[in-house]
Image (cartoon, rainbow, N blue to C red; front, side, top):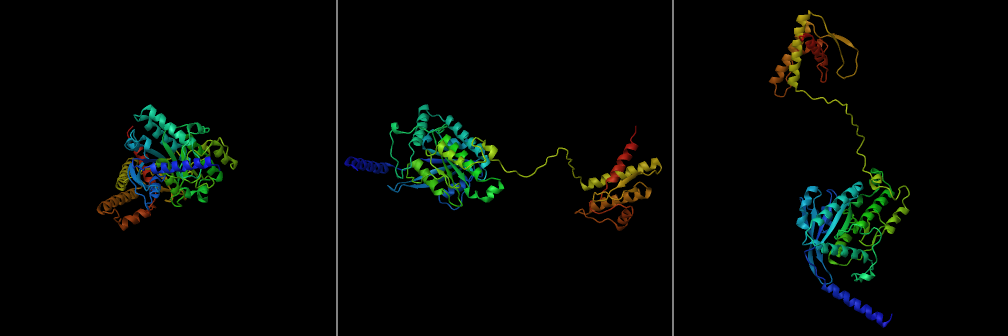
Length: 439
């Protein structure tokens, strides 16, 4: 190494030291977390902040992460706002994200590995919410342009060097954006977090009829999404503490410029870690070298489908039976018996024949019964009258029927067991009623 090179390295070291000494932590920075309900937003933030149990709020949750710069001993608190997953709560966004703090906000989007079929819908929804909100802010067009250029520069200047401090790169030395990178540039730092990756075991694959190729296909899709939106990607698990510490350090790195030395990780399917700026289409397509049963251009929703909830049969011809009050039923039977008495007097005693089925509903020996003989009508009338009287006297509705009435009814061949069919009486009454109606 020449003296000139030694002198150059010395000056770089001095500049880096001065850069670190000049860095000051401020508490006006914030993270805003979007995600559908159930994606584990609150639990993840509790883990990042070292809390044992999450504290759930309503509509808009606030927490903070303690920040410390070990180089100069500076401290600060990074505010974290979590928007409830219900669409009605997005109107609270202007409270935490406005024109005053536009350049001091990082947005984190969460999805869960337990519902991978919902990723496209959920991520598209929250990106649209964020995009519409940014467009509504009364910001000068120049400020929005500068924000987009800053994000593009971060992407272009990315490089893992193992250095605690990132060296500045001249604009002429910046690499051009790779294909499909930052095609949607919101001018805001984005981090996409896939939660609950501890569920990616054999049970998860079996229950959803997935295989390892499906897991690679999911990663392929979400990495493409992050590439287009200039976002970092982290697969996390609270139970296994997967990437939680790395995610915390990365947030502080993007917001405060603190060191982040963790290299990208794509080998372990449940612990993916990709900083913004590292990925390219070529790296993403390597996944398809191990995917043989799925085409690269397949639609995501055609491959990753929601599990079936069971065999549900819909029959529009089903008849719905409404229950009838017990006292109303008995009163109706009394009316039937009165009609039988009236028709008996007019017809002179001609019997009406009907068949009776056993109370089980199964066809038994078809036996003809004469329900309209004078003695039978009298016994039935007395039975229903006594049953109604007992029901009204007993608060519980379980008043007993006299032994004489019970024996008389059973002699008629009518079962008093629960579920016994009384349908023949109704059918007789309908015929009798038709016969006594005036023409």
